[in-house]
Image 1: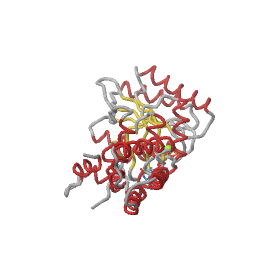
Image 2: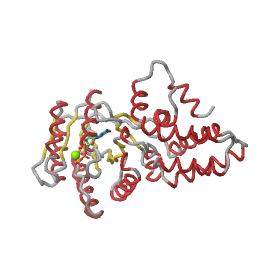
Image 3: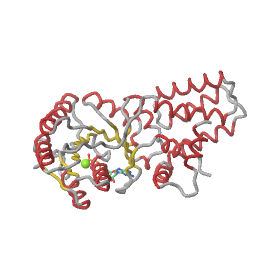
Image 4: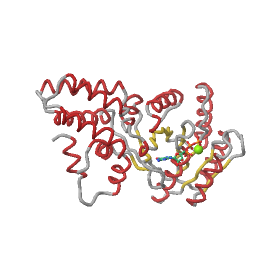
Length: 325
Ligand SMILES: Nc1nc2c(ncn2[C@@H]2O[C@H](COP(=O)(O)OP(=O)(O)OP(=O)(O)O)[C@@H](O)[C@H]2O)c(=O)[nH]1
Ligand SMILES: [Mg+2]
């Protein structure tokens, strides 16, 4: 059984799971761009030929799947179609989705949710350029783990942009979550220190550290992030356990370029892709995974608190590839 049939069987229920609905709603624009075009294409051809594959390639590229992965997937689909003598466009599309799944999954299993160890706070360092949704995502993460019963502390390490601290504080108040703030232009590493000092002594489970999103030279960024990490690690052994890069899905391949730049200066343990609901090019998740090897741990599917969800490959491909009936 191909993946599409499997996903239909798994998710096409009358009473849809709440998480599945988030994916299908949040990925609506992407599905229209990808799935509908795929189906239109297969309706126009009786059997597949060179042109069919060229059009298929175009659809994949325009979904921001990333050129390297697209070429590889197309090669694989071509090879399978020859070997198994598949000419039916619908069948080819099924093979395609199978290969998209494998392209992501073959990079290894990951646990997306944060893990916690008794007595040691889990520290999440959040990085990313301006305006990608860092602060909102931090609030969403804080909300998520508060709901799960964790004691959360926010650390407002973005002392560079006036107003950044204030914005995080508004969220902290709204969510009734504690926060450590620094003074304007205070060294971010020293704010991080204040945060972990408090976090370690007062029994918090989770610390989320915001950082400045300014664009700077690689050397400066590397120095700043490694200083912050060093300070955190001195106070809490093994921390920060996670460094998450936030990427705005609507920036397309630009987001992939940013991701590469960050992964060169610091060791990322995950990517969070925001504003998936605002893009029609939802393939960016596959490109990030392919080009960086870093897993996408959570995705933002809307502006509300609950609209951050754990990344799930099956639900994602279902939302992206399966036409509603
Ligand atoms: N539709 C949608 N909007 C989002 C999502 N995540 C964030 N946003 C919006 O994106 C805008 C920018 O978000 P911020 O959280 O302020 O971004 P930031 O990276 O902290 O920005 P700076 O601190 O200025 O660097 C806000 O209007 C958010 O509501 C999402 O998943 N979906
Ligand atoms: Mg911010």
